[in-house]
Image 1 (tube, rainbow, N blue to C red):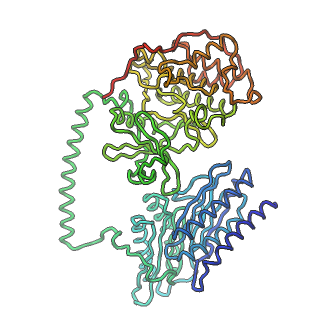
Image 2: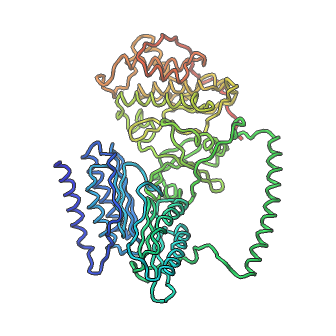
Image 3: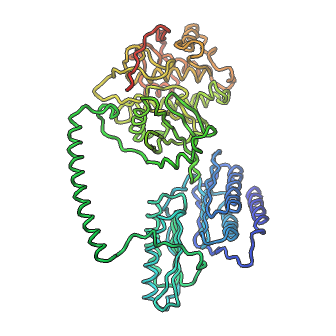
Length: 629
């Protein structure tokens, strides 16, 4: 209990100390409490860490508002088991001083919910919400409703007519406006009275989300009429009307340009009708041509990027290219996370505070467009906790961008033989191996059609905050139809991880991924590269060494020297090495399926002795190279 009161005291003293400078004799922060709630379902696991995160997030919000001259801010602390996401917004007609005062009231009252990880407080002047998961783009949620005044307008019919018309206009105009805010008033018939109203969406919802939210809230608030006051609210928006002014006349918004055209003279109507008729006729001609063209195309060879004529896959979200470019700071070097043969990956911070990874394909390479299409088609329909999630894409002319969930820990290779070497204990390594196996088993056997990744390697395994692995980079992926045991295709992948039957003969099956997985296991256990390309480009010396140690029953000499022998069970490590060697058998038929590998890793049964087979690719091996177009 002591930690609770000390936390509250620390936050409240800090807020009260700095708020004094913002007081004004004429201020009105509009701190009438309209709605409040604590999410008692979620209590912080580690109260101390949660308190620190919560305090930092609130302080961050306040700094943004007071120092940035803004009415909206988000903050997040996500690096512990008790993440905190907070959002604050005040009405645009408030001064910054009043906005800060409203925030101070809300941040003081939200302490009552501590240590529950979830709360929201709504006032006439502002809104503060805190959750344990990302919610900034949420438009609607439970806890919505309306608050109606208890006095009827002196001219109820006229007041209701004008108020409904004004609220309808605000509902239409606000989603079209930058900042999603509008304040307006409308005179009544007597010329002396008026109705005042505002509409506002949180700046991080989408335009369509704002439209939907305001439509809902309009229905809530409409039941208040003809009473003189009404407020409607939802997670992502707020509306209010009143017969009493609650903002100054010079703070009204010109909403007329944002309203859809209504009425017009007869000539205008005729012009519109004529234009519509001509437009519809032209559209029918175009549709007829497109239909003919589509039928004609179906008689032709199915396009290569359509991957064996499988059902067209529904695409992900389309992003705005300019927004992504800005979020990556114009693809700056400081934001670059890594690069590959055909692409570069950048960290991008979106306007709502969400961090994503943006993959920019290099159009100078002939395979870039094919990889782009393949990746979008495949991964947009594939969902598994051990596969990286594609959020969307963007393209501008020849510029091609893919947007992924951001993995703060980066790629696995950094922790094996890169700058983060030594950070992975045995439990983390085993969990990574197990997670990769489950991801591949899903691709090969649990998705409705078998997907072959073709480029399984440590640099294509990303790690989230909890070091859970996610398979990434599906640019080379292929679909294997049910009626085929393998494909004949040119080699494309990374030497040192590629199976011999594929590199030499172009024989591609899901067992190619199994082979690459076996090599990755050896890298995870040893902390060494499978192939030091700077010295011997086409050798697989790590696999050679693993076999020699296996044959001499000295498996443990392969283990990474940064691992403490007290940290792992020797028998378990030997079993995992055995599994890696089974996965790298030269004959595909002798390799297990990935679902069998998952079972092996899940049990402690002994592994049958395997015999060494020559699966190396020597420097004079002629590769079956894939043609590029």
